[in-house]
Length: 569
Image (tube, rainbow, N blue to C red):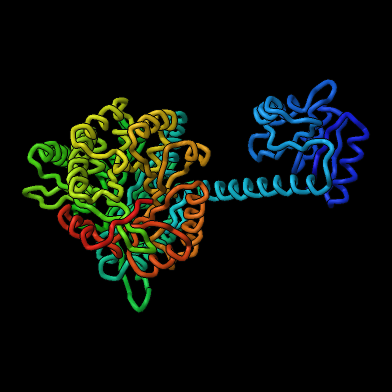
């Protein structure tokens, strides 16, 4: 190690230099605190040893000033003192120190202190490396290696602002693969993921270096074409993409043909910001599907009918809460080693009297955008807690009852009061309830989230972070929140055994969660290979179709009755 030693006593300094040199360390010396700060900035040592009592500037002040600019890598500091009492320990820690070395000291004690600091330094470096890796990965879609939805949202804001300022023309293309679900259903997700990667690669070959390509999720892609000459250029790009995707895709003896539907919206246009631009491109894309797929369409005023239909569905959703068309399914969470139930996630479903079963991917975003999610979410929570209280009354309560919180619900200032009222009304033990919040929702409103979650924790309710790994969380922030569990997003689990990067990411997320003393739950376990991978890498809990599909409350009660009581993690 490169060690900086500061002491205004030449005798003490000589002793330290001799001891550290014999231990094999490189030594940098300073005769006072001011010189120590200069040497620190110049040499960037691995460890600092400061004598507490020095003229001009004592060790405490020197450490405090070092910490003012040494915030990223946090190099350990050991104080050297003839005597250590409670006051000095407190002052040292507050100044940014990590340990004390009392004079006189033996070489054995000195070596032990240094080894301890080395371990701390190594752990911090590993954590920083993992954080940096996750930061990079958080902007990239793990399946296709292009930008993900979160990064796309940042880019579209940047590009539309720039376009507006510089009076340029920008086009947004929304691309959806036609009938992609059939590929996943008939050939499996591994074939589907291969197709997604190939599609992303072919689309990338059709655009310029400065254009932006992202996968928004599922089989949906988006392209930002900044600074184009005219809207017709966007049409030429769209047609080129359609033609490029036509040649067959060959995998595992199958020859698969792909087509796509593309919606295009442009800026500038009347009363259009980046949000309405995305809405218009989406509307145009669905219009392309209605016209038979395998084509592109520009957004026009005539497409308002599409928007009207969307409003009709929104009104139907409003009525659905009153007509009791919404219901809840329950998906168990298991201890992966024992296969015992440790929790159950409540999932909202909608059965429309005419349309039939409306998928959550359709009505949940609609509920979020319209603001209906707050009323629906509150009613869902009350229903879930009432069901949990019934299980509790029958003696079945040794598991976590999980319910999702939307971003809009988390923004409610009176959320803790709402939860308290629901618990009082239903008589559910608060320790049984666990609220799930997506990582992106949590980090979008950091200060507000922290305050609300602390108040919720005082009620006895626990918190889990859903879709972990798809966003980017400050590890220091997570560590200080009342979080019990991290739920690894199913997009990572789905690629286990197929994509080596997914294996690496999942291992890192498991170890990261466990090192933060948090429970880790894997979502979306669909096969035996994924299940055994998670067990081998120490993942405590999981859920997915391989273990159990979402079931009714009655079926879940029966499932509980078929096993010995499980212990919650």
